[in-house]
Image 1 (cartoon, rainbow, N blue to C red):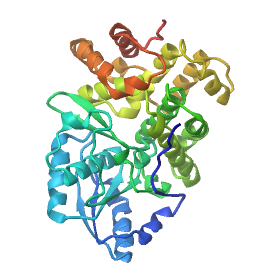
Image 2 (image 1 turned 90 degrees about the vertical axis):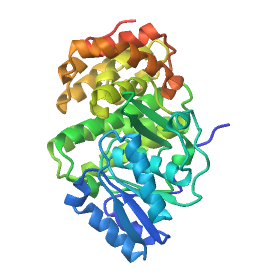
Image 3 (image 1 turned 60 degrees about the horizontal axis):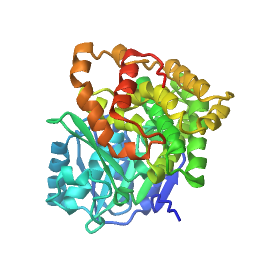
Image 4 (image 1 turned 45 degrees about the vertical axis):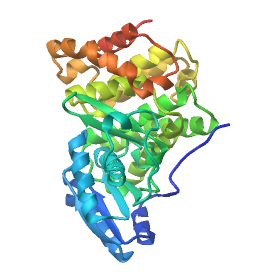
Length: 383
C-alpha cells in the first residue's frame, strides 16, 4: 500500500489569493524575506484579505536567503509573544521554509535542529496554529511539501527537515505574485522545479500518482521556462510555471528526491550558491550516473523528442544554457583551492543526507566525490 499526501486545501490560478478571505482564524503571523513582497504589493494584498476575514495580522520580516537556525529561533520567539493561530509563509522558498521551522519551535520551544533532521522526527503540529503557504517564486514546491531546509552557518551545511507534519494546511498558487521575479530568479527557480520533477520520477519509491505529476511538471518546464524568461510579463505562462513547481512538489513530497539535492544542500550551505543553479549544474551528470540503474530517463527523453538518457541530459544542459545559468561550479566562481579544501566533507555529508536514501542508484563515497568533481570542472562523467 502507499499514501499520497497533499495540503488539505489548494487554490490555484490567477487571482486565487483572494481565497484568503475564506480563511478561519483570529491572528496570523506572516513570515517574509527581504522585502520584495512589500515592494510589489503582495504583502499589503494578503493583509487586506486577512482583514476582510476578520483576522488580525503581524509580520516577521527579513528572513535571509538560506535561512539560518538563529533566524528560525528568533521567529519562533516572536510567535510565542504574538500567539497566532495561523502562520503564513509568504514569498520565496527561504521565507516559507523558515516559517515551517518556526512553526515547529513555536509549538515545541525545546526542539533541537540535530534531532529534527532525523527522518520524520517532527512531533505532531497544529496544537497552536495551522500553516498557510503562498509562494512568490516558481520552483521549490515548498508550498505543498513536508520539507524545510535550514542552514547551520557554524557548520556550513544545510539540513533538510523532513516530515509530513510540515505539509501546509492551505496552499495558494497564484502567479500574479511571481510577476516581478527578476530573470535570474525565474531561471534558477524554474530549473529547481525541473530537478524536482526529474528526481521524483526516478525515485526508488516512485509510483503512478507521483510519476504522472512529475512528468507533467517536466513537460511544463521545458515548454514554458524559455518563454517566461524572455517574456516575464506573460502571466499565463507564469501560471504554467507556478503550476509546474507545485506539481513537481506534490510528486516529490510523496516519493522524495535523490543525490542532486543531497549534493546541492552541501554546496549551497558551503558556498552560498543559489539552490536552483546548483541543481541545474548537477542534473546532467546525475542523470548519466543514475541511468545505469534505471531506464526511466528514456521516458523523459521522449517528452523532449529524444530517445536516450544521454540525449535527455543534453537537453537539460541546453535548457540551462538558454536561460543563462552557468554549466559548472568553477564557472560560477568557486576557486579550486576552496573547492578542494571542502570537497571531502561535502561529499561525506551528502552521503548522510536523507535524499540519498531515495536515489535510484546506490553509490559509494568515491562515486559521490567523482560526480561532484565533474560538476565542478564542467565535464560529462562516465561510469
